[in-house]
Image 1 (cartoon, rainbow, N blue to C red):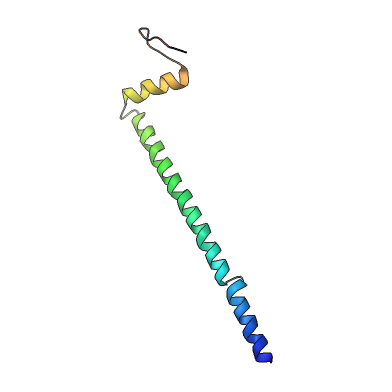
Image 2: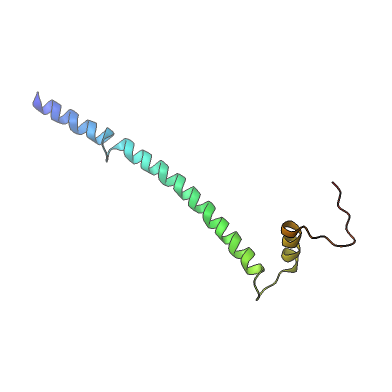
Length: 84
């Protein structure tokens, strides 16, 4: 009878315990979520690095500079017409 209880305890611990099957599935799901978040942050960092490089003193992208001046400062050329 005691052997049955010990076996039941170890079976329960293997499934429900801190290091059990359900905890492992939960950890793997969290890992996948964090990996997706990391991938998004890496892509965002790469995009920001590219934009920073394009606006640096060594490499000046006039189209990007024009876009940023329009977006941030509200600049427009004299021959442009803005429609509401």
